[in-house]
Each structure stands twice: as C-alpha cells, then as structure tokens.
Length: 168
Image (tube, rainbow, N blue to C red):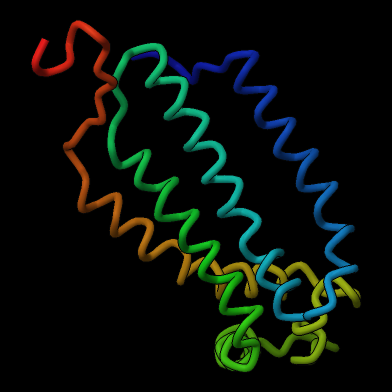
C-alpha cells in the first residue's frame, strides 16, 4: 500500500488555486448584483474542484493515454452546473434569492439577519453563516455532478494515437 503521493506540479496547482481565490474574492465587491456575488462566492469551492479534476485528467491522459471517465464527467458537468447557477443568479435573481432565503435564511445565529447573508462579502458575516451558504449552494451543484459521475462509472476515456486509430 502506497502512501499519499505529491508532486511539484500538484503543489504548484494548489498554490495557484489559493492565489486565484485570494485575488478573486476582493474583486467581487465590485459586482453590482448581490445574487451574482453570492453565487460566485458559493460556487468557488466547486470551481476549485473542477480545476483540479481537469488538471488530473489532462495529466493522466498525457502520461497513460487513458483516464477514468467519471473524472472528466465531474469536470464537465460541474462546470456546466456552475455556469447554470451564475446564469440563474444573474438573469432571475428573485428565484435565486427565494432559494437562498428558504435554505440558508433559516439560520438565525447571534446578531445574524437574513439580509446579511444576501450582502455576503459586503458586511461582516460569521463563519457558520458562510458554511450554511456554501452548503445551500453546493447541493444543486454537486447532485447533478455526482449523478453524471455515477452514470459513467467503469468507463475509461482512451486517447487513440495514429497507429491505434480504426481504419489504419
């Protein structure tokens, strides 16, 4: 049994993701729509997972010539779910606010109001409220993504080279 393996490229990827997160979050204060800002902050962990899956899938495809299809499906369906969430938050902010109010708005901590959750990033919000918002946004992102991974379990994506291609 081998232990946890790490590489310089993997460490550089993690440092790059953390740096991108620290650069992105302060710029979200300039986003005019509160729903879009909240969707960006909530989708950030899923975007990190999608980036890691794409990097792992690309490196395995280059090295081994094949990769497990659920890894690629996680990246594709997860990216599509993030885009759909951002579109809904921008085009139909009322529906997005209703969803957040019915899920994360139920949390009433000490000195925590539902409006502070909508203004996430503009006012001081507690760590528990942040986790509740992440949980509320993560469910509609993860459910279709994990369903797509489950449907493609056992399949592999193989890279065919010139001599392996059919008809030659």
